[in-house]
Image 1: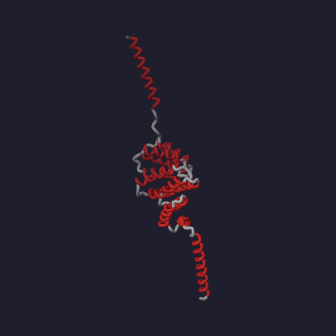
Image 2: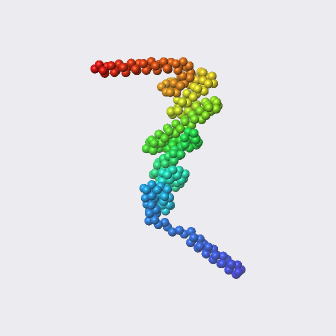
Image 3: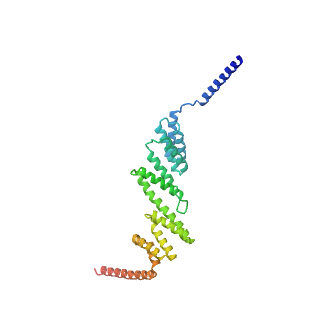
Amino acid sequence: VLKMYQKLIVALFYLLVLLGCSKEEVSVKPPDINQSYKIYEEGLDAMKNNNFFYAAKKFSEAEKILPQIDQAAKALLMSGFCYYSINFYDEASFNLEIYLKKYPASKDLEYVYYLQALIYYEQILDEKKDLGPLLTSKKIIKNYIKKYPNNEYSLDLKFKLDLIQNQLAAKEVYVAKYYIKTQKWIPAINRLKNVVNYYDETVYIEEALHRLVEIYYNLGLIDEAQKTAKTLGYNYNSSEWYENSYALLNKDYAKEKSRLEKDSKKKESGLIKRTINKILNK
């Protein structure tokens, strides 16, 4: 029994020693407040000198040790902004995501979400490339406008949303033209109808309607071609695309147009001569 008791004492002793070591190992010195402000100031100086990458690193470092929550939040936001300024979009987005998780009650949330929207918007590629960034950016911007409908950032994002709509329409027309070239009429029609149904306020609506007229005409669907041409003419009768559709459906149009242009030039020439004569006879 005595031996067992001695062994228990020894075991408790080693346990206390181990616990003591653990406490020593996990003990951390409190952050140096002056040092945290110094690091933050280094970030500001670097940003003023357009050294945004170094500034981002410093702001991230300062955020971890600044004593007040609002100061730390500001540092993390500045880090995200600096990464955004040099097109380090992944790093910027990562920092902003952390910001939203750590500081959900921040007074700067409107700006943070705006910066997020800009990050996605600025990664949009042209209409020949991937559609993903366009759709993601559209969704984020629409959510922002819905959440903050009347602030100054929403005004800017509404303009950008119009540009996104145009690019999405451009993508549909681009793909439709490829299908037309390869004579895949059904998918071409579907793409063009997407423009008519979803992007009718973009600059590509007129071309989409004209391309539909072309396809219907080539397929012998004259009634459909004429109906679509009427829609184009009713809404955009002064456009070049309507003129092209009209010429396609009216074989004598080219001759008539040529005659009208000649008559117009004759009238214009006569007017110029009469004006010169009036000037000379004053």
